Image 1 (cartoon, rainbow, N blue to C red):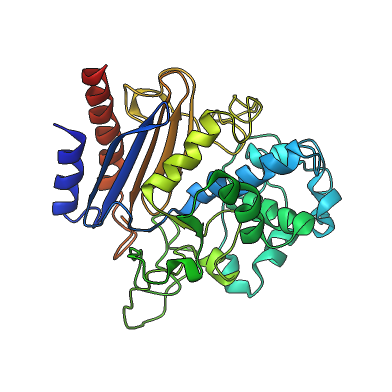
Image 2: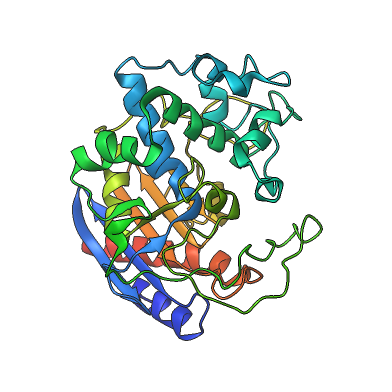
Length: 342
């Protein structure tokens, strides 16, 4: 089955409601399709923000000498040093091995960043994927060079000529933006039901507002989530990483730590059951997933970059089987199509 047919059938089933994808090979678009959307439709990319914004802007700051990856975060952001975190480094946060908790409904406490600053280290030295770590990195960027959204625009997206990527704002006016939920706060993700409850309310789709509640409480601009974009824009950002226009080998290499392997700011495929499928990513590959059903993958050996964007959380977060099946099936079909063209 072709990658187009796989996306088409998934959207016809309504799981996800919409999907858009773009693949580049050596910088040239070799696949682009959208169902339930248009190629220029805009999606909330959720945790792909960690690569598209935070990791990217930190790479430029490290390049320019404004920070070092082995700097203590508290050197730039003193409030982060509370409760035993004074020695936690930028590198440790990028590699998700600081010991910070994975997630917490900080939006319930009224001040998300105070919740981050007051968090204690739970598993120092062991890799635990942490939204709190990237919330801290986003705040650190702002402490160094001002507003995170503007820093990303001025240092990353603007110089790369990427117009269709950014935090919510005026650029979304008149655009087709896909909704991701109907309540605020959003319903708990599977496994988080015991942490909070959503009060009764009239369902209200809100395209253009960030899905993540911690990011929403920060005005939609955060280090872990908040970026919107088109599939081509996300793929173009990934291609900039592949070609070395941003970052370099220090980021796109395995960061040593106890736990699942990762790069700095990046995930890596986890074998044949990876969301990148069984054909792509067999060698050097890096990327990231987003909770809303988005992903960015870069296969360095095959010189392929793939962005797959969906709004699988609409109207609710409980459906996970569909996106787990769609991602590898789509990437395997895309790999087969690329092989046929070779």
